[in-house]
Length: 219
Image (cartoon, rainbow, N blue to C red):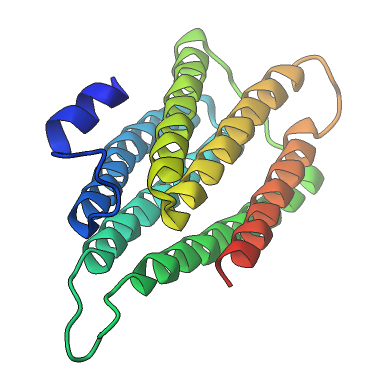
């Protein structure tokens, strides 16, 4: 599917030294991220409300932050693809790295919010009312994020894009986070322990660690 999209939306896709081609890669990656994350946000928010799970709702808003990141990716790709002018004699390529840095700080913000909510949940656990439909929707969201990890990684490596590689890492961490939320919700039925909150702390620590890695890679 990725090859199909590249073929139809990126003319001369192998000419990766061309700023316009690089811009199209970044725009395609960001646009796909906006569509996928909007879909995942709607699915997880609906599922979280249905089963009364704060962890799932938090995961939904994590996808909303990813949507914002994808929007930043599109803007960054547009700016970095601009030709040099009097104010920017060396072009606008640095905009791509600035956009990647913005994504990193978004990851840090939502990671900190998730950490705070998870700690609260450890001391004030809430019952999760699982049902097959909601769990099924959550499980289906995992392969979507894996696909997002793959296409960002493939395109990011091809054009050596810091912003696409940052999005790739974030998608992989989201896959792990969602999987942890699903597993912890299921284990909560058999383990008399605030497993949801503990899993949330682990996931948020992973998200914050992603910020550290991305920040080091963009400075």
